[in-house]
Image (cartoon, rainbow, N blue to C red; front, side, top):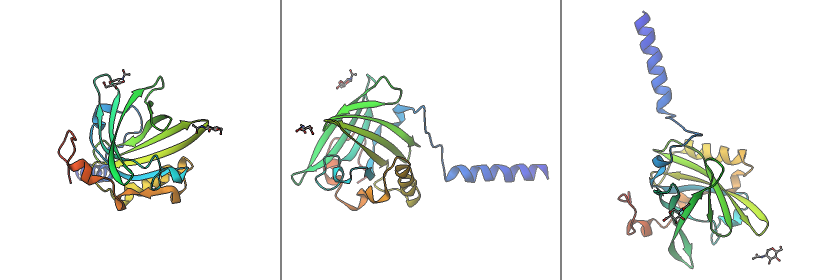
Length: 191
Ligand SMILES: *[C@@H]1O[C@H](CO)[C@@H](O)[C@H](O)[C@H]1NC(C)=O
Ligand SMILES: *[C@@H]1O[C@H](CO)[C@@H](O)[C@H](O)[C@H]1NC(C)=O
């Protein structure tokens, strides 16, 4: 009887972990975020920035941890109708887990949460000429993520003061996937 109860207990624990595998919310292992990513959802408190022709409407290709601990991101944006590569090097700041880069002003960002294998959520703050706004990004290892993760991202956005109407689903628009498949990503593209 005891053994049966133990088995039942274990299978409950196992089933619980399956749907919610090892989500990390602090002390990230940055080496594990390297590799290919796809932009899934994009949100901002200033919607125009992420709408068509907005300067923060960008699509991730891959992320790479550099030898000097900076992070490299290959992004794409549609500029004058063309998919254009936007390489970004992000340096560590004095604040733990916070990185900075220059793009349309000065930006800082940190990871909100990730499981390394499926998704990652970032928050970036842009400071430009006295104004400040936030951009939240949901990146996936595959070109799309399940509804549960998308809803989780919407909930996170709301916690940071971004309404659901300002969350854009990039899986339904041109994310420059064709540009990345002929590009130079370190791992072979899933497209
Ligand atoms: C780290 O290396 C990259 C690539 O060489 C460089 O662009 C970046 O400025 C370096 N970061 C620091 C903090 O030295
Ligand atoms: C910065 O803001 C000031 C005051 O609002 C404005 O006059 C100036 O043109 C802005 N500069 C840029 C580069 O946007």
